[in-house]
Image 1 (cartoon, helix red, strand yellow):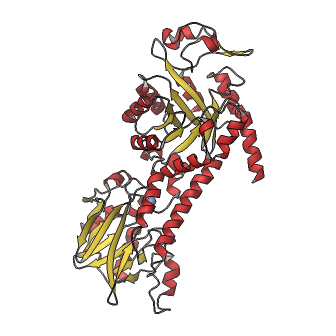
Image 2: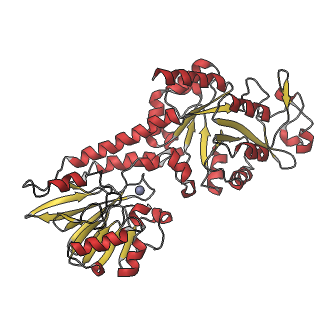
Length: 483
Ligand SMILES: [Zn+2]
């Protein structure tokens, strides 16, 4: 036998033919066999063998339904379609994940697929992927009707930041986390007698299989399991967010270590990293001759002592000026140089667009160095962020503002803005928890003193910009040793 779990009748006309790693379920109807998920490529042999062992014919597979697009649920489908000509079903949002076949049917939320005597209710429950669907149907056993339910994508692991970075090309939004929470709440409204997992651990498949025949009850029939499982999904998402706020907290050297070195210069950036910052925040403006440079103020006066603003000079002319801090000075640097110097490092870069009009150029520069996974484009001007999103939706955006009302938060979510950047003084643990539940990343700005910096960190945010990264890092170290 190929599978590590022998195929078996789960209840009524529902059978299990999966492996521990990739589950596949088989529904036997008067209109042929229905497969729910197929698994990795190599699962094809397991499915063939499993169907034969149960006494059915693989050529009778007429429909293949998928919970979501990930390879451990869909990779074997293309071969099965070639073999059987079965009709395939998936959400259109998940087509980007699949290979080798084009779905014949796209699910609709609340839609019912009728195959033979079985009516399958399809609920849109995104989060794990953009197009996860959960399926519900009745089966009959010993003259009784039982409701079978699935949560099409129940794992919070794929919503981790590390996974987002690795699979960045799929353009996964932090906001999927909020959708995951919403889906859990929606699914709690469904009554389920038989919870069918899409990984064996979820519904303790193997433990139940061991009980088959040993009691007079079918161990898979247990209406208490579904709500408990959904709650465990919520808890695991909570845990991911909480852990990441500590393990992935970004200390951004704000315009570099600008407390100690001329702001937005290579000197300040390198000093920030030397102090241990794992992120750099900087500002972009455009010169008279169209070069993107890193500079904060509207005028040159404060940090260079010169008259006018960035847009009044060519880059060549700006090179004659010095940015000063105490006895230190350095040149104004281009965005291009900055990305070349720091893009390859394991850092998070927050790039603030100071004025509208050159959003596409900034986006192009980030895309040129393939740095979408590491960069958050921020702005106090929502129009700038909308322009970036319209042009390059693969890039993440964060909105800088003093504070956010509930209404604003919902608007930003609808716009696909993934990060809220409130002023440090307005950050509370309650707000951060609420925003995390909606899916936002939360990074504060304006932590002007150590007390504010600590307040931001203690509120379980995801990051903070500081002029003195050494102090924040020292504080974080003290918190770690306390644990
Ligand atoms: Zn998955």
